[in-house]
Image 1 (tube, protein in one colour):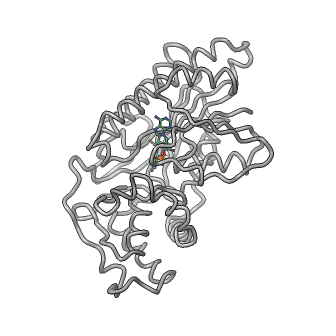
Image 2 (cartoon, protein in one colour; image 1 turned 180 degrees about the vertical axis):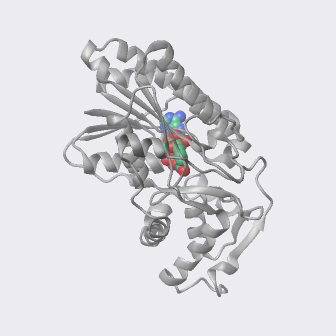
Length: 354
Ligand code: NAD
């Protein structure tokens, strides 16, 4: 198969590209604008010509059309997005432009191309849109998000993702484009840009900087190891029913403060030589004013993808988090290579988020 991946230089997109290159023999075209969050250092060098990269912005409709015509994909995995909630609160316009207008451009370019395909190729074509559980908003203390849960996004980020989900479903219903949607819980693992809770905590702890936790740290997220997500996306792409939505979750709820404390425990074992003045990593934890509109709890009911596609996560949270801490310790070159991006200027003042 010839698969176009958007956002393949980002955290989850690069895990998807690595999965496709390692576990399949498909040809992959990665298109990514290489914003501050994208890094080509997240993708291994591949010698056999199965991997192509084109720096392209999904806000550029003409550029997308040319890529569809030249690459002629049989499937699209759409992950390109602006993804950091705090940035969306500061500058929502970028999120509207990429997540909504960019997704519309991609749908339109895909539709123009798809209409021109021979009937059998048209039948087999797939467009998988990768989205988040944040579109469902705040869950409250009980229950889980199912595929039928009504949308109630709280932040500019989640509202922009919700809009893009609606566009994708409308392009299926109105034009017949063979789309699928996934809504997934919080991911963690290697190659995550260090503005998100887990990598930021690891890197700040190693540098002896404060580990800032929003509010009382009791917000609950359902954590999924990124390689399990890549596996889920491939199953949905290859075996999911067209027009359907699949929720993907780790069935692994943790309070943010518990995540930060577990990272500190792992660092005590893995990096016992601490920065000067630091006795215990946990002593670096401090609580700061909560994010406006912060959702208290997300949790996913992923019975549908399990029942229909046989998917369930392989990695437990503790083993996945341990591997992740080890990875950041062993790969400081990777995150130091990001030092010239926005991250360098902002990191000291940046608050963690999940
Ligand atoms: P990320 O921020 O790490 O990567 C996003 C990638 O998109 C980057 O490589 C960036 O360069 C690229 N990009 C941004 N704007 C672009 C544009 N205009 N044109 C082309 N490329 C552009 O994000 P991520 O965490 O890997 O998330 C990927 C997708 O998965 C997003 O759609 C996100 O909403 C969704 N998602 C993320 C999580 C999570 O926990 N991280 C959970 C569920 C769903």
